[in-house]
Image (tube, rainbow, N blue to C red; front, side, top):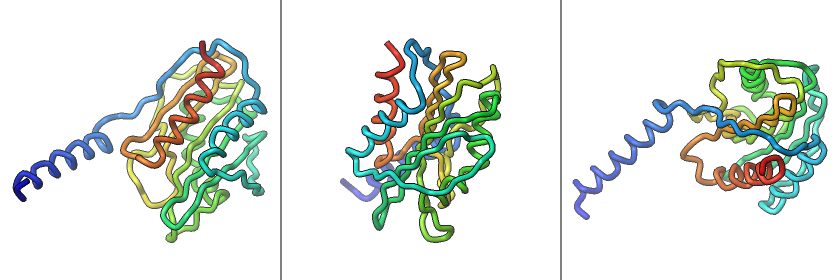
Length: 194
């Protein structure tokens, strides 16, 4: 392959990556829930599915008035710092308020799972369980589309037992993380959908 054709191929890849990261809006996908699921069962299923991928449960002291239960798993090596967090909210919120709230506390969540500012980023997969989600039409920025080298929400999964809905959103271009996202999504979908 000539250097010119290699350059064109790289340009097309960069153009596609730019489109996916900055232009394409990542929206929540919505699926109807047909089966009941408790937070404890959700936590257990997610934990078992990701522990096969070398994620370890970690304990930390995370306090928040809007959260009744929270559990953390982490996978770290020299190059990768990823975490999965299951959260049960105890406060009634609209869907967009819930997403914005998770975005607001992501640095605190990241620090709880090992994020150290200026040393390493952490990519987080957030699983939210709530029976208090109010109807909402404005779904704002469910996941981070740009790597800011800090605490990133790479995927979010929301189980809304009040309205019987399951929402999910993923970042794009995350090779390592996409396997974990797929595992979590498959685990939840098999449990709550027909």
